[in-house]
Image (cartoon, rainbow, N blue to C red):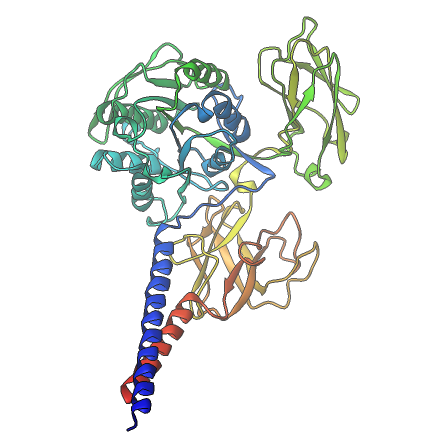
Length: 548
């Protein structure tokens, strides 16, 4: 062999070995990314823009998600180091997104027992009331008792894993949500365990009197005092119609829970007053914790909130999508007005029709009216509005209260009932859904992804099957297998509520636009396929090196 050939051969082998090393490195990094993503990407589903969740209050003046977020922004916001929110109410996931979008906020960690479009569960009412607790709250409180010196991300996830009606439970009923915002927000610890906060305040809120909600509150109050350095002075309890009294103790599943001093009623007014009391005490070394239990609801809304200049008489045009008019429930509209005072009383008109006086003391007044008054644009007039520099008003309850059974939902999922939108070829595709009629059957279709218009025929389809619901209107089993061994492509899921073979907009739930404009996708080249291809390339490269 000539010298130059030897050099060439050596250089060739060196070059190939470098390529091989780089491929191995890419393989390891890519695999680590896939593995890490699967570990840390917890489910979180944002609420649609035309829906709002509420926390039920004892006086019926329920608290909308956006007005709750406004109260937090004005009173807490950047005046704290950390904020923790824990919602056990139905549709509680919808309370999180407005908090996450606040302009002025410190580090945020939030969790809820359920998605924005599903109920939360707990307490067997056939048993003694002392045994009742909400399922997610019980799991969260159990996680604290097991080891309180852990960050909220770990506590939230353990509650998700051990919730007996959560994704790992049977039957699946609720899907806990969690959301973090801010540097190292996942590492927040509660109370005196915190690395950033030196002082802390908590609000515990229930607006309903079910025994399980009271037990949840007793237990959380006890845990904050025993494990996290809170005191009766730093815990503000707003419960039921019990301002100034004490919630009696109880024995729950063999645990003696102490009585709890009540600072105010479980109402929007008390919450507003309490936040204003806390505001001057807050600072950038302060942690704020808000815990809510009781009932919650979901509403169809026009979320436009506008500040208008102060005048003696204010005229405001509220644009409302005509399709939303059919969704108005009992013709209720919420007028949110800040600081409106008048000796004569501010008067409210809708499209020339007198609705009534606007309360001088409340931040929200709800009026009932004939839905036939509504147009695509609606004029609200407030007369005799004195004193405020600005008035914030909105047609905020376009749809009013809508129970969970009226919000139809369908989603693709994995075998554990977790929302999943990207599958590997050959995977089984599952689905979950809620809001349907009690003990009914429907046709479910899987179709190739397309742009849907009202009245469009659902054919051609890939899969057509019959699904069933339980007494609560949930699809059973949860999750339901809807496709064995999926093939490559982009797909939508439709439930044909009317059974007419057509897509009826605003009637038939549609799983669409979740990933690449489709409900779910089986990519042409999946992450596993990419890894397999890299592995095959490594084998071929190594065999060539050996032959040389």
